[in-house]
Image 1 (cartoon, rainbow, N blue to C red):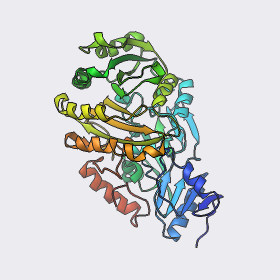
Image 2 (image 1 turned 90 degrees about the horizontal axis):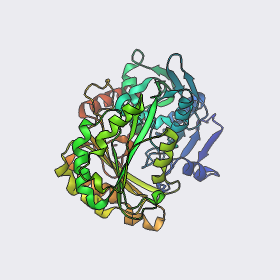
Image 3 (image 1 turned 90 degrees about the vertical axis):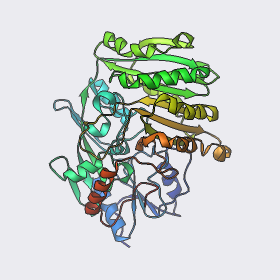
Image 4 (image 1 turned 180 degrees about the vertical axis):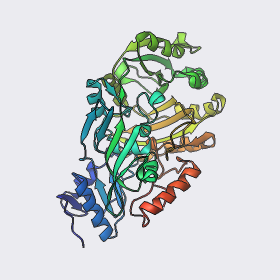
Length: 446
């Protein structure tokens, strides 16, 4: 058996193994899947050593950067689990508007560092996410309507291949692997040890609106929201959130909340961009009616995380759709009728699907994104809540154009997340860089 040169490795059954396995999953719902060995890499040399060990011992490889995959895609039975969360270097070059970051860099910490310099990157909406998995799967982040998904802003990558070779990928070097990395997500067949990112100047004004509607107005609110979505300014994120309660606001009843960020160069621009969200035909019956307020990313992260408490158990599922409101409403009503208690929630988001995206594996998107998040605390409720997200998304699948890797549930409900032509191309690139199938593919796909 080839030996590992890495200091931190844990074999199944040995002391520290279960703590190391548990630490790779943010979700309180820990799958009963057990790698043969877990390796905690601290640098690229550790990654090369771990891949050499896996190759010598016939192990398949799973990769974890932050563990925020709802389904814990990285955690598989057998093989080697490579934890790269400690590769968290971050260097910002404001002169050239680039940053070099490790896959273990915490996205909201990176965002705060950029913010302190008047800079910006479309990091994700939740705290604690590491950049590795986020960038590979696409990256639906702040101001992505203007800046595109985060993967569109990846300029290059340092990758360790299945042969243990460290290579640099960009449009001129290993362009096929660069193409694959931007959207392949947990099915990517290499280990990224560093990303080069394009960063941006921070918009001068960050703001929000806030409207809250009683659940009895669901038909009116969702019909209106679906109809205005295509016309909303790119600088505004349409976010329609439905929960059975809003404890932070002292509301103990089902509520539809529209809290939409705006990124602009002046308050006047921000107010004008948000104005359309005050045109709901039942706005006079809103429980809260706040057309505009200034805010900042730190406040947004705090607000978002009230729906994602630590230590809870999570199952998510999602769909892209272009269906009209009248076709979506029956499924939306069923979601609301069957929704588990807060902090479980349903989000309907407008998205700026562009036909002129750069050529990359990321390739399924649409005008509307719907996502369900089942969130509970008591293991005794596992069976009670386990199927809510998947069953409701399955019931609406005839209206879906695909699914997003951000909230994938592929092990329980396979769905298209890359176009057929891009998937065929991706498999060809995989056959070149990982001909023996050393790296795990997506769950639900052998």
